[in-house]
Image (tube, rainbow, N blue to C red):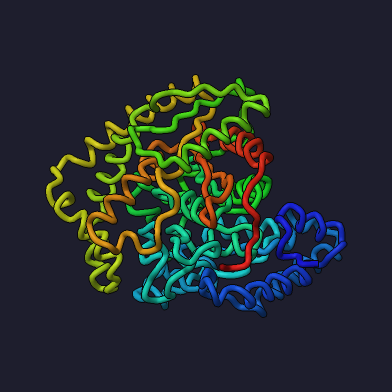
Length: 464
């Protein structure tokens, strides 16, 4: 049996029942990693002996009659910007190649406590900054469906790994689409949870994200909506190190099964293939009993996107720009340089103004989502970008930011957003994005399951 093909939900059930051992699953996962990772460079560090030792501990716990946990023996990958005890938290930087973590980030600790076997560390662009995954320490990650396409970023290694069958669940982080876009580009599912849902803290860099108002949110990528749900449940366990964690229930009260479809939020120039995916998803939802209503626009999304950029540029831009120069990463420098005039022109009270205005937008979105429990919108206005688009100059950067308007704009609102892969255009994945009110990931997942039931691309795949 090719165990690496199975979902996390199925693997955990097999291990808990004793039909297979965690060591068998780990050995099979390591074999899959060795067979395909050389073609995509998704996992940039792994230690087979440690992986097998983790699996043996799960088997030993089960033999003693202990509950091995909801992820009993399931292979999971961890992004290199999260602390994992004994590994360098590189964040794709040569500057941090020796920054070895002495403790686990809360999300990593939660995965361990749930019985997961941490299979390897996945690649990210330098500073986890781009929708493309290249850096000078670990190299380039390739999209397993088509190497001419970006695997997404910044959790590009996570998306490529889970799409290629390297691990059943992948950990990622998302400030401006870094979970949702790799899921879209690699043809899997990925969830950015509500702000405060999943605890986060790195001893190697105690600040959470680039300033407290941006806050990188950890989330799962997986090949089934059930596995996304399982990953969320495990990752969301409390940890006192994160003062922003919120003890919200994972399932909220019943609401009307209503979907608002918006094809061109903020006047986005949505590609015909993306519009087709949206309308097909709406059809699937309608057949599953959801009431679907098309709307002309959402609450302000362009302004939300502008506020997110303003907060980023106003809080930490100079430090990141200086670090990029020390690192010498040309792609990071190019992206940051494109925003330098705007950063230098910001008024002294720009952050205070942006935070005040953001509160108004959060309120507007909360009122909208109270009337429209789930919103169906594009992940991106385009199909996944050609790899390296943002290294083609100002026009390429502008094109990427325009197409990914919702990736950036939804982040400061703090709401959950789920990428659901729906199909292929040739070899190119396409999918949709579901949005709900804060701490209503359950609504995104319920709608996502209805869309998934109508068909998804083949996964896992052998790298193209």
